[in-house]
Image (tube, rainbow over all chains, first blue to last red; front, side):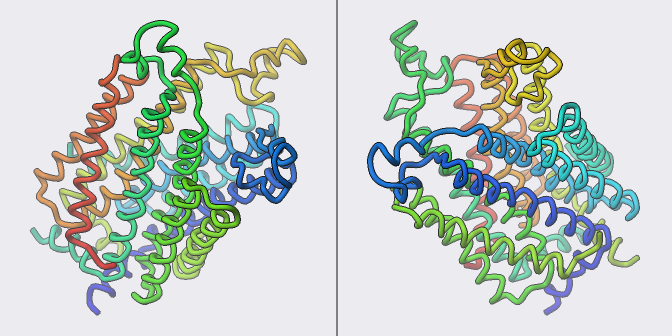
Length: 158
Length: 158
Length: 158
């Protein structure tokens, strides 16, 4: 069909292909946080829902696993920080990819953001001493601001 | 205008129409969690902000409603789980819809994901015994991974 | 390249340009919540991670800053509320912009949503007495529903 061909042309655009690649990577990285949370919940035996502790027995013996654990809470903070930062990247990045940037400039933005968020995750989970986590956060944040500036300069219609 | 016609062609593409339909449905479902939270906050009288309890009187009589409630916290966990899983679906699903999949394959992905997330919400809110919630979560998670694989295979440009 | 030209035509579409402008604005507004959180964490000396308090000394002297603070928690609730509401706007708004609405109707939706979310942030942070925050939330919520209705009417393919 004609329309089918038309819409697949977007993914033939090199900047859009780069956007698609890096967006898939950072979203998959964010999704991995769910598995890390599950791993810590199971190994630390720290759950949020009574039905999740049913396999450990009934009554008081299971109730003690309804608790917070520092490692679980740390992963959850990292996951929420991903949501707060990767959502703007995905949204602004799409508009940026459609605003006609140079491929090399776009790749620079996508690569630095993705590298910074992967570093941020390691800095949060190991954890590294500050300002490791803070700097990796700031780098990703700045990249998103830079893309937003290009979007607003190109598209501005209030 | 010519460009207007051009951009509406995307929504004429059947895979994109399917993506639009299921994305709107899962995002509306996620938005409903706000109303469910409000319902439980009002019926359980459990609020997070002092200004929300002002209508219950002043001072100590209102202060006692500044508390957490197990039902409210359960809905909030379900809402956050939606954010963690529906955000990757919306982002990766858009790229997937533009990567030229067969309509039948795309519909299969979108339908299973949407069904799994609706089941997940019921499993969380009723609540159903495990592994009901865990399985519905894993099904949606796997569908998103499958779409991400297709996106990376089609678009890969690092 | 031909494809490059094709993809930049999307950003030449006036409705899409309006979408890009308002989406960049609300996502930047959401990102500002991170800076507000950091400001309150530093001035209230209330941190979530031990490594963040290392500069205040070692052992017990630093440990006392690992605490929650009402102002920090308030900003974090506002940030999470942004995520819960701006994510649906960005996703549904994109589909809406591609569904061929009138420019004036689209602008009305985008402007009201953006204004309502800015008001919501002020209502949360000052804080304003209710129903200030509740109404600004409901206005943004309704705009997103209205866009979802248009998307489902135009794209419906289940």
